[in-house]
Image (cartoon, rainbow, N blue to C red; front, top):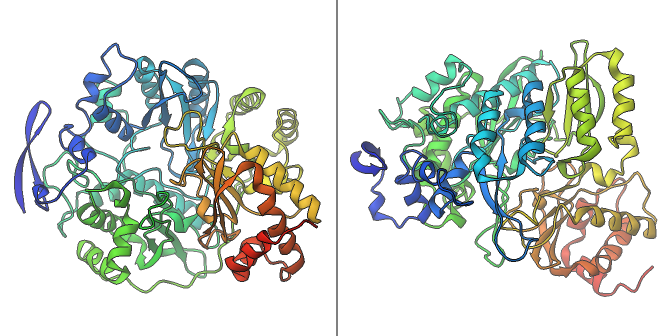
Amino acid sequence: MRSDHIFVGIYIFIQPLKTDASEVKRSKVELFKEKSNFLRYPLNEELLTEAPNINEAATQLIKFHGSYQQTNRDERGQRSYQFMLRTKNPCGKVSNKLYLAMDKLADEFGIGTLRLTTRQTFQLHGILKKNLKTVISTIIRNMGSTLGACGDLNRNVLAPAAPYITKEYVFAQETAENIASLLTPQSGAYYDLWVDGEKIMSAEPPEVVKARNDNSHGTNFPDSPEPIYGTQFLPRKFKIAVTVPRDNSVDILTNDIGVVVVSDSDGEPQGFNIYVGGGMGRTHRVETTFPCLGQPLGYVPKEDILYAVKAIVVTQRENGRRDDRKYSRMKYLVNEWGIEKFRSVVEQYYGKKFENLRELPEWEFKSYLGWHEQGDGAMFCGLHVDNGRIGGTMKKTLREIIEKYNLNVRLTPNQNMILCDIDHTWKKDITTALTQAGLLDPIYVDPLNITAMACPALPLCPLAITEAERGIPSFLKRVRAVFDKVGIEHDESVVVRVTGCPNGCARPYMAELGFVGDGPNSYQIWLGGTPNQTTLAKCFMNKVKIQDLEKVLEPLFYNWKVKRLESEPFGVFTSRTGFDKLQEMVDKWEGI
């Protein structure tokens, strides 16, 4: 190991590097990170200018602080710059105090809506640069955070949102929170920029501090403000989910690391199965980019999970590509090396061999909608929120209920919300208020809507090629109309997901019917995912114009109704039938 003297803004820092960075071509973002003084410069200067926007380097750095610079693409003429803010809420946990603060910030500084994401967080849109510090500092002072919600580091850690008090669920959520804490940036830049250096943090569990500081297997940068990340952080975004057996509410196999609690016959957690290399993003017309499912890595005892996760992260840090960001996710490293080599390298940083995976039951998708017992005498209520967008009467009513009853909240990976800790005597009044605000009992919601997801896409996402959130209500109505036309019952459904670009934020490559924007009013159609989110879909058709969807959907759904096996889901039917036969069905379709 050698030491390089790297200029970082205002002082010289001796930063140990594991490889000679000069030997490998690096992307522009890598240079921005290196020169940033651990995510400070030039963002700190750009925030002080009168301009409504920030420069290219600062635009990359502010992602690590939880924000994207955007413009409203519906508006013509001069660009109106604004910022999207994303929170970081491990397990989707949101305190009463934080929810009320977010609700108020959306009205005072945003566009009047809250957006629930597919990673159990909030997004605020429409924040002006001059208000960023006020908004972020308010979130921090209400025990929230935006640190690491975006950028090349570990993002929000998913876990089942249901507030059950069983040992497995509690342990999964605690583990997710510990992993999130382990991989949170440590340099203090976030607090320097947004609360003038004041550290507003809750105490970390001692096992987290111990695991972070442990360097017995060469994982750390000694004496660095960022012992795990160093100056360069990770090559790209990094996603982790934790869950319990059966519960696939988190799309476990779509993450860089998937962690599953393994318990004994008494329900006492003993350790974890670990899966690696999942990821959704791809690039149109670049066949060397692709979505991937996580592969089995091995089992670790419960006391080792933080060390194992750290070893995986360091393996990606040291070996993931930093020259071309299209190939920088860990899934490409696992794919290039193969799982055996990847496991061997991780074991060097872990200091132990992984044990064989423990056998698990089949996965199920769980929505947690409706009323449920928590197990401690209180109830929780899962609310379906179309595309996660909370606004208008719904937003006003939710605030009143959450404020009146002092409720805590959980956000789900399916863009929904759970109201927690509800006394039985409050159920009737809360149900009445929710119904009047359009938040219906799930039995009154179309089953297509229950499992559907869409990313925000236009008008604010700079990557969007076409509509997603604004388009999906029409898509679902048209799918339901085709169901009615071919005679499929109203209680039947398929998993529909829509994204405005191939990055896959709404995880369309796991859908039974996925729409991925590939041109103006044009979509790829992906088929073959399963309702329990364990099978990768494949691209069936390209460049399908929005007005031509029925020409594809009618023959597919009609043949599913007529030729499916008993209780066979649509995604399983399409995989069993094969794309050649499906294409023939579409080409020869002349109507019912």
